[in-house]
Length: 353
Image (cartoon, rainbow, N blue to C red; front, side):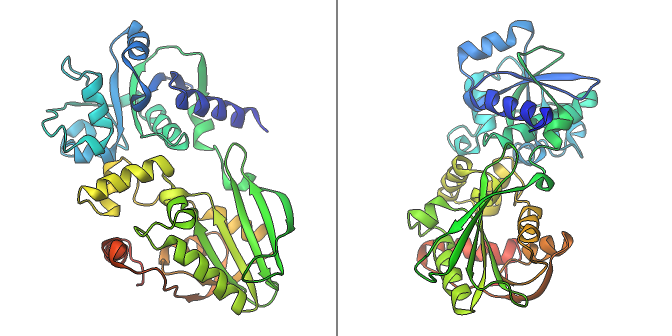
C-alpha cells in the first residue's frame, strides 16, 4: 500500500472520528472539521486559532439560495462566512437538509470567494464523501492539525486502476449450484464481489451490475425495487446458461448507507430521490462505473450483454472499453410504495422503464 493511500486512509478515519484534518495542495492548507460530528467542545478547540467559516458543495449551496451570489458562481466548493448568529446548531441545520423544514428561517448567507483554497476545499469535501459523511465542513485557512493529507492523495484515492482480485471460491446458490464468488478490493476502499454463474465464458455473457442496497436486498424494503431486481437478475442469468453478477459496494448510488437514510427522510418530506441527493450536497449519482469495467476485464470479459434499465451504465462501461453488445431490460419490484421512486428514475435520470 502506497504512502499516499495510507495518508488518505488516516485522514478519512480522523474525519469520521470527529477530529480536525489538514488538507494541503502544496501552496495553501486548510483545516476542516465535519459539522455533523462537531460538538461545542470540539468546535471551541478547533476555533482556538480563529473563527471558522463553512464549506459546502455547490449542490447544497444552491438549495440555500447561494447559487446567484457572485462568489459562489461556478464553484464546486462554496465558502460561507460564519457570521456571529451562525452558531453550532444553525451550522448543523445548514449542513443537514433533513432539518430544513424544522429550521426554515436560516440566512441570509454571504458566500466568500474561495480563491486560493478552492482546490484544497474541493478535496476536503471529497474526503467527507469518502468518509460517508455529509459534505459540509467547518474550515480555517492556514491552521495546523495532527492529521495532514495532500489534496492530490484525496483526488487519486481508491482509483479503480489499483483494483486487486483477492479471493475466489465455489459458492453454490439457489439459482445455480455451479457458481463461483470472486472478491475484489481497492486500496483503502470496500470489497466488491463478482458471482460467476453457470458457464459465463461463452460469447457475450449476460451481466448485471448491482449496487448494494441493505434495505432492499436484505431487509425487503418496498421503497425501492433493488431486492427484487437482484433476485430477478440472478434467475435471468442462471436461465441464460451463464453470466456474471457484480455486487458493488455503492450504497445509495454511492452516497453511503447513512446518507441514503437521510435521503429517505427527505423523501418522507415530499422530495424525490434526485432532489434528496442534491439537497444533501451530493451529485445525483456518485457511482463510478469504471470499477465494474475493471472487474470485468480482470475476469477476462470484454464483450457482454447487459441487464439494465439505466443507459448510464451502458455508456459508463463502453467509455471504459467494455463492449455492450445488447441491453436487456429488467422488470421487477414495482409496487405502491415505490411508484413515485420509479417514476423519478424514468423522468429525471433517463431509466428505460
